[in-house]
Image 1 (spheres, rainbow, N blue to C red):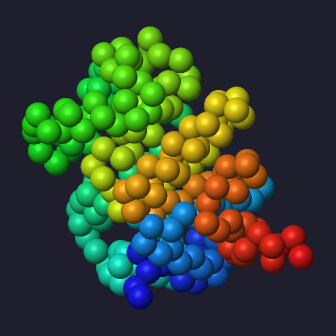
Image 2 (spheres, helix red, strand yellow; image 1 turned 180 degrees about the vertical axis):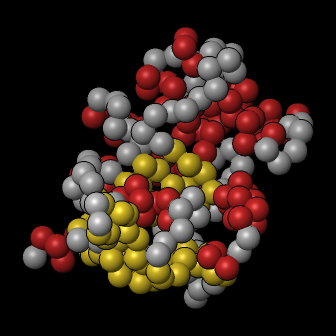
Image 3 (cartoon, rainbow, N blue to C red; image 1 turned 45 degrees about the horizontal axis):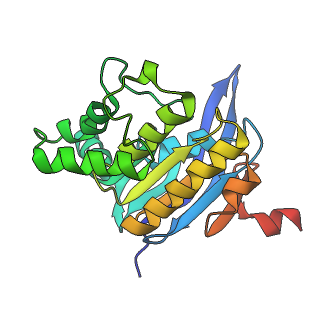
Length: 230
């Protein structure tokens, strides 16, 4: 079966002085439909760079990234942008909510990138916020929400367009551990319900344990956690 997302032999380097620092070196990753993968590794190991390459926000210096068998690196920039818009959901360490929009209106932003929202979209947004425990916070601005509530809105927004793949980069790093793991349960449950693939970059072993697999990025390569520990 063709993987949902597959990267092979990725290389990525950045200039430093007269040389180049390799962040990704012969890096491989394969993600099946509906599978969840946690990526761990020390700070500065290239985890965010890897996500940027996998989502077409940055181009590798070598290697291949394929979406359901299609080489993303062969597509034009506008085609990759449409692919991100239509297929991907993003969750970042900082919520990046629009400060002048309510929680409900923030969820409708991804829809507006495609078309004018309709009554069904509004109802879907309400349902997602309810699922995140925010039924009574729909009409509040981000500044009127706690940090945990803001991140719940961000998680809900990532699922608004029913993506095939959700990418989360240290999604709960700004929350205390208990609140982060509580929200992680909602994230993984929602991804399973939708059948979406999920890639989570994290330093938290408790969050990583919720994924189907855990990989560790060291020396530019991904390996299974048990292989690294061995």
